[in-house]
Image 1 (cartoon, rainbow, N blue to C red):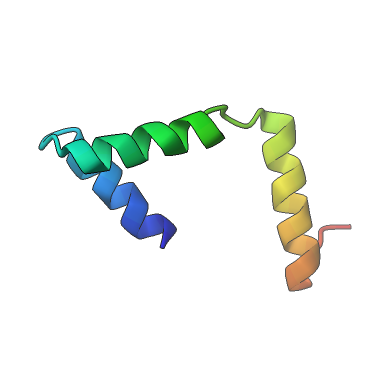
Image 2 (cartoon, rainbow, N blue to C red; image 1 turned 90 degrees about the vertical axis):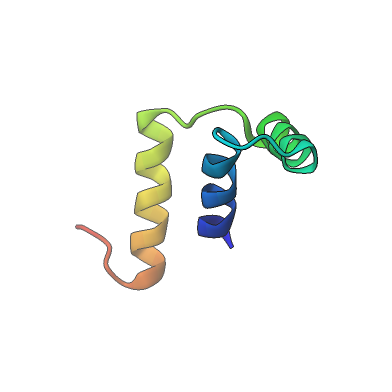
Length: 56
């Protein structure tokens, strides 16, 4: 699903679709802030521990 959204949003850069633009704007409002390096490390660490690949 995420990959599909990513492709649609990339497509939107070249071919403007009003409905897709509204969806993109709403998504950016909801999740617009980029994660800091520290936050990304925490997300990665959580993923690794869930998958059994935690680094000691």
